[in-house]
Length: 159
Image 1 (cartoon, helix red, strand yellow):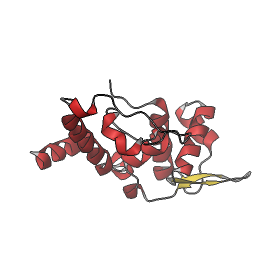
Image 2 (tube, rainbow, N blue to C red; image 1 turned 60 degrees about the horizontal axis):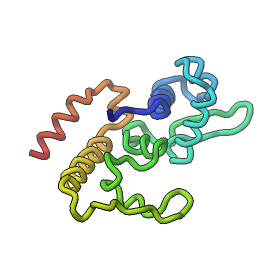
Image 3 (cartoon, rainbow, N blue to C red; image 1 turned 120 degrees about the vertical axis):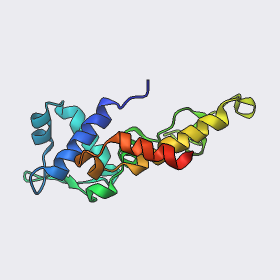
Image 4 (tube, rainbow, N blue to C red; image 1 turned 45 degrees about the vertical axis):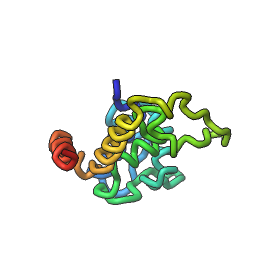
C-alpha cells in the first residue's frame, strides 16, 4: 500500500499550523501539544523541513519555526523529498536519483532492467505521480481544494 508515513503527516500538520496559525514563530512544543503528536519525532521532522529550506528555524528562548516560502510555493513533492528522500514507485523508476547511496557507495542496478516487461510503464506512472505531487501545494491543502479535482485534471491532461 502506498501511504504517507507518520513523519510526512506530522510535517504537513506542522506546515499547515505555521501557514494558518498565529503570526510569528511556532515552537515544536506548541505544535506537538496542539495536535497531540510526539514532540521528539516532530522535532526531527522540523529539522528535515528546515534542511530542505521549506521552513526557517530560529534558535533560542524566543525561537521557533516559520515558513520559508509562501504556501503556494510549497509542493507536496518538496515536502515528501525533504522528509522521505526521493519519491519513486519502484527502485528502477528512480535510477537517476540512486547512483550513490547516502554513504557515497555505488548502488546496484536492477538485474532485469534490460528485459523488464513493466519498467517503461512503471516509469511513466512514476512520472505522473511526480507531476501530481508537484501540482498540489500547501495553499491547496489549506484552502481544502480536493485531491479529486487535481486527480481529474491529471487524467484529462494525459489522455
